Length: 234
Ligand code: FES
Image (cartoon, rainbow, N blue to C red; front, side):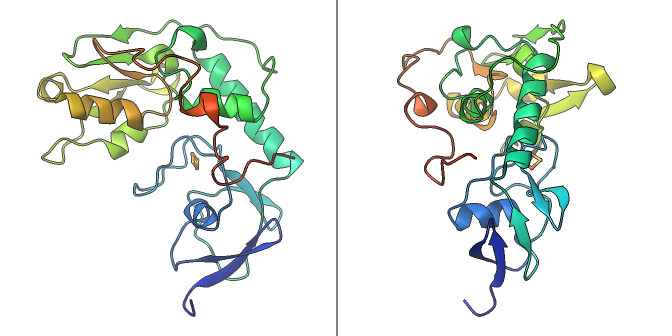
């Protein structure tokens, strides 16, 4: 315990390992900070901005900020929760998310966050972008209408030789996720399921497999996201 770093989140005394980021340390201390692009065990990318917290009056991403001794972090406060809600709304209007027909419904982290932060009508206009679906791989469908460009699949999913199977293509507003057609040919059913599970939304979907578990009985249909850690939103 002695070499642990002492810090506070919303006034609660917490402890972190040296070098640990605020997001992982919060989770270890039983405090929920929402995240879409980060997963424990992979290098943080800071791309979704959902994990924004306030540190010394500045808004910063918890996943890319290392804990420092004596740090006082504001997490579950109205200003930060509204910022998170606005990011969730932006993600919804930027894509085409038709939750009722999505195989990931009930297991989708974006949908679960929209419920948790009580999204009603987004404050931004819908873009209704035209996106192409790539169903050319034997085991997976890339459903770009739902992709939030979080890069989780690129960072967390490699083949057995450590090669990336997913990559970004194009730039700016046209940026899109792609799958390496050759490497994708060798994916096992287990690999395909792992890729689908890594994706926080329904952008990576297994082929010829779906709706085994009925919508309404899935993970976030039963419990709010983060409620195993903390569920109160101010
Ligand atoms: Fe920190 Fe996405 S989880 S920016």
